[in-house]
Image (tube, rainbow, N blue to C red; front, side):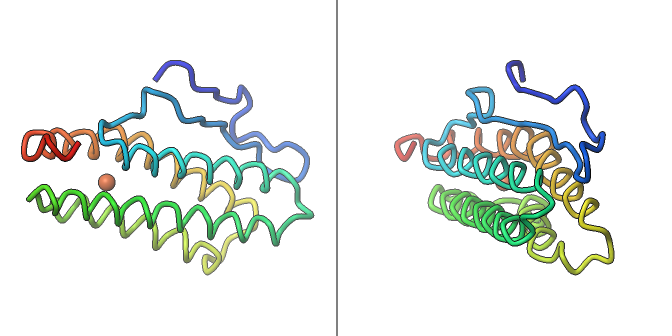
Length: 155
Ligand SMILES: [Fe+2]
């Protein structure tokens, strides 16, 4: 995954808020289905909006909205992926769908956690990076190969 911008001071507080890793969409994240790739790119954009909102401690309302937008972006992305898989005659394995649900539930419920604002911000960073590193580039890519075999003409 060359070309991604990682902050040199990851997880080091910058003033009153954590300095989050920057992560931008690029071709290394393409999994091969145009509509899914577009939605995945939107998830990256939503994460970046959240990251920018999280920089300023005075913008709690904006952070809250950005978290909801990020959760919505994930939700839309996963719903599309599951629908496309079914259209191709492929039922995603339970563990794959469970990971989708877990990510969305964790984001929608993050404010229920008995943790500080900064820990909420770091939790969301963790959810996003974990999705990129263990789901998008591993699980999605593995199952996308099955879609390709099952129904090439839809891609
Ligand atoms: Fe997935």
